[in-house]
Length: 427
Ligand code: NAD
Image 1 (cartoon, rainbow, N blue to C red):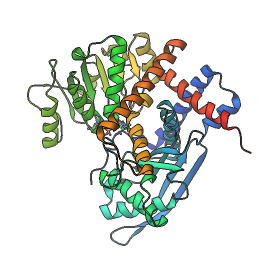
Image 2 (cartoon, rainbow, N blue to C red):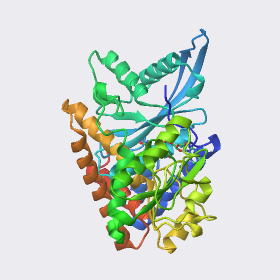
Image 3 (cartoon, protein in one colour):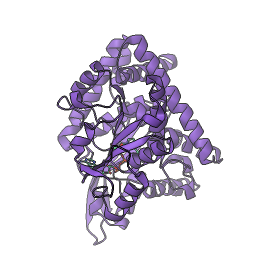
C-alpha cells in the first residue's frame, strides 16, 4: 500500500516548537486585530482533546498498545475538519498546533468548519496491511465518540491514504448499521470520494498563482517555475502550470533536482521518476541540488516538500517574485521579513495549499446530499473559493500594510472570533 512520504513531519521535540510557533503567529495577528482578551483565551487553546491508548493484535499474535489523539481546536464555525497522521514521532503538541492551523485554513477559505487533527504514534512502514487495517479500525472506534458528519470529519495526512479513510468509513458505518459516507473525506471514488480530490491541492495552488501573477502584472506564458518536491502536490502543480502555458524550469525530489532554463518536458520527467524512482538523470536537463533549486533564476518558487527550507541564510539570494507555499511552513519567520522587504510576494501555506481541504469540503457536501459533481464542476468551485480567498487577503494586506501571511491570519482569526462573539458564551 502506498503511504504518504513521511520525511516532512516534525521530530518529537519539534511538536512543542510548532505549537509555540503557531501560538506566536496567533498572538501577533491578535495584537494587530486588537482582539479582546476573552476571545484570545478561547481561540489560543484547543476546545477538545481526546487521547486514546488501544491494543492491536500483530500478525504473529503479539499485542501492542498504541497511542492516538484527536484534537478539535474550535467548533464555532461548524463541525471540525482535519487529517489523521500516522507517524512514529508525532506528539499531542504537534497535533494541537496542526488542529489550530486547520481552523485558520478553513476560515480563510470560507468553509463552514473549525479545525481538527488526529494522529497515531506508529510507523506504518513497519506494519503489514492487515495490521494497519486492525489499527485503523480500532482507532476509529476509540475516537468514534468524537467524530461524525455533523461533528468532526477526518481526512488523509502524512502516513495515511484513501484506503485508510475507507476503513474508517466502514467501521463507523458498521457501528451505525448504515453507510455513513460523510464521516471522512479523501475516500476512494468508488465509495463516495470526490472527483478532483487527489489533484485538489496542486490545482488550487495553480489557481491562486494565476491570480497572484495577474496582480503583479506577470504574463502567464513568460512565467518560469521552480518546484521543490515532486510528490502529489509538486507533480500536479508542474502539470497544471504547463497546461496553462507556464514553463517549469526546475523540479526536484529527495534525491536531487533537474534544471532546464528553456523549460523541462514535465511529462518526460514524471515518466522518468515513475520508472527510476527519481527525477535525477532525466535527459535534456542539468542536475542541481535542492538548495540550488531555491536560488535558481525563476519567477515563481513552489516549495512542495519540506518545512523550514527558506531561511535567513538563503532568502536574500532567492530570485523568484512569487513564492507559493505548497508545503506547510517552508519559510522561517526571519526569511519572511527579508522577502517582504525585497518585495517578494509570499503566498502563505494556509492559503496556497487550501485546495485540498476545500475539495474535501465538496466531498462532504456531496456525501451528505448523495449527489455527485463532475470534475469540471469541482474545479470551477475550487477556482472560485481559492481566487476569492486570495483577493480578500490581498485587500487586507494592502489596507493594513502587512505581508500576505499576516493578512491571512488576521482575516481567518477575525472570522472565527466573530463567530464566537455572534454565538455568545454558553450558558
Ligand atoms: P508527497 O509525499 O506526495 O511528496 C513529497 C515530495 O517531497 C516527494 O517528491 C519527495 O521525494 C520530496 N522530498 C522529500 N524529502 C525531500 C528533500 N529533502 N528535498 C526535496 N524534496 C524532498 O507529499 P505531498 O502530498 O505532495 O505534499 C507535499 C507538501 O505539501 C507537504 O509539506 C504536505 O504537508 C503539504 N500539503 C499537502 C497536501 C495534500 O493534499 N497532499 C495538502 C496540504 C499541504
